[in-house]
Length: 218
Image 1 (cartoon, rainbow, N blue to C red):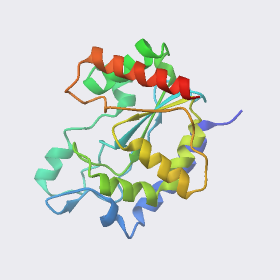
Image 2: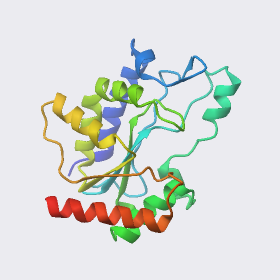
Image 3: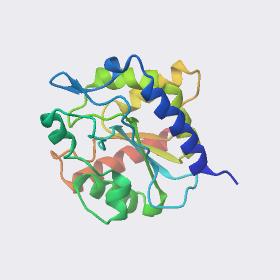
C-alpha cells in the first residue's frame, strides 16, 4: 500500500528547495509596495482531516494564504499577511465556519454527498499571494513549477477536481499540455468559495449545474 503522506513530503521537500534557490522568484512572486513575499515561504497542503487515501475530492485554489512573516520587516506587508493565517485543514479540523470552509462543506456534503474526510486541498502557488490574484504572476509560477503541481495531483489521485476560481482550469490544461500529459477528465471550475456576490443557495445550484454538465460529457 502506498504511503501517500511520505510521497507528498518528498515532493514538498524538493519543492521547498526549489523555492529557496529560485533565481527568478521576482518574476513569479506577488509583492506589495515593492516588497516581495519571501521566496522561501511554502505551504504544505494536501490531505485535510482524514487518513491519506486516494479517490478524494480535490479542491484547487490559486494561492497560499499562510505565511512566515519573521523575515518581513515591512509592517504594512506584515499586517496584510497576518490577516490570513489558516488554511482549509485547520478550519475544518477546528470546526470553524468562514465562508471559504462553509462552501467547501456545501459542495462536499450537500451537493456531492461526500464525507469531509474525503477532502483534499492544494494551492497552485504555495509561496503566497494576496486577496486579489495577479493572474500573470500566477501563470508564471504555475509554468515554472508545473512538474511539481502535476506530481501533487498524481499522488493525491482524486476522483474529482474542483477548481476554486476562474482561470484555474485553463492553467491546468496549459500545464498538462506543456508536459505532454493527458489532463484528468473530471474537472469542474466554480467561483472561489469566498466570492460574496452570490448566496450559498445559488452557489450550490451553480455547482450542481456544472456537475450535471460534466457527467453528460464523460
